[in-house]
Length: 249
Image (tube, rainbow, N blue to C red; front, top):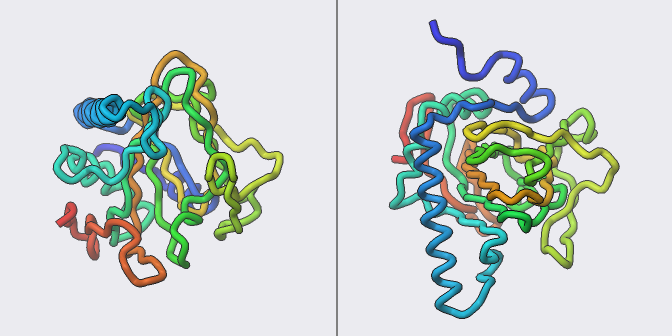
């Protein structure tokens, strides 16, 4: 019998500390597909900026950083979003119900990619909700030198609840931790996944290397997440419903 993708010890670590890491679990075909889709979107953004005679478009900066969010429809990304690997991740963390909530590429350019402040993903939702999961999928080898993510375990953060955040006036980042703990860096090869709760504090550093650092971030919730006005906060595409695969349908 094959070994399970996620061990009992990793599931316990998720319950105790809010995260676990799966090295090199993304199938090569899916990794190659995400490289291709990411590259296509970067070309689109660059062409739009060139046509407009600008180097910045919203929060995207040509050759520096790109946030490419919620573009999976009409692409091949659902092949990975609703894959067997992600089904196992969702079952191990959320249970028998899982909905795609959000997805985005986060790209840091060579020797330029910006850092991100300590925050919890739940702080960006704005309403009380059941914690969801972030799947930080590495499309390149990641290290401290190229701006990997740092995770702060619950036991060292002193909480597993959403903490007050304040907005950094220069970067517009929400910031929720100001202590001395540097967190634990995720240092893994391409095709790995850091799975963490939306209440885990995390940050990332600068990319100081001459190579791109690309990450894909699908996020899943156990139930549809809604804004204060009752409208969906983002997507609520069903993946697992009462244990059955729905694959977005």
